[in-house]
Length: 258
Image 1 (cartoon, rainbow, N blue to C red):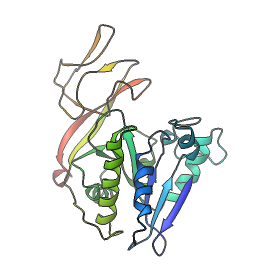
Image 2: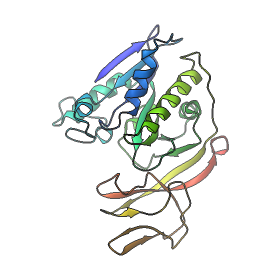
Image 3: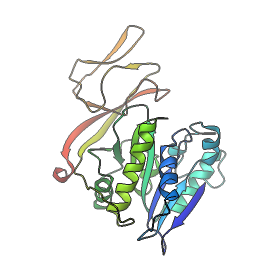
Image 4: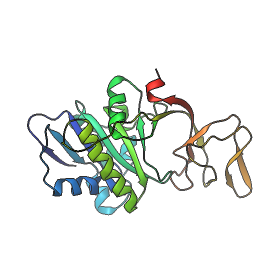
């Protein structure tokens, strides 16, 4: 784990990149920002989490770090030990966690619940969509006051540009940098379940409603049909080994959701 704190005082903000070693858009965004040597108006901690996986350009070494939390300092896997170390660093921080994805080209935010702190963090991203993934246990944002962002497709220059734009907006909105920013009122989706199965081709579109009876995935002539209407989120053909992704409901704008 590589960490750097900038600005005066003890940071209550942290920016995390590379929980998954092959998702390096956040690392690029942090590097580009820091190369400008900006003046920070409050302390911020920057973290490149899974250095061993980054060096090998793989998702993880022993197990998925973003499913290893809270971890164990004496754990059997590298990621279990790293998860415990990382959580100890971030427990008292408000966190922006930068990712990329196989599921959707347009950035969106992820939270575990919508208390006032998380609402403010979501607004600070400037993004138009947020997904409440409280249904999915184990990620970093289940253990800290944080927002994760899927910045675009894995390994693309677009994801890197998006990550840098979101990072600058977030730091401006939280008062860490004197830069232009926008606070958003995103559409809120809430995960309701997982769609399991191996080697399915996802034929729908994330965030576009699937009607009851509609086909949204297929495999060797077999089709998956919706029992009830839902919105796909984090669904993809290649993103998972044992599942297609998640079903969700749309709740309305953040300002309208209690």
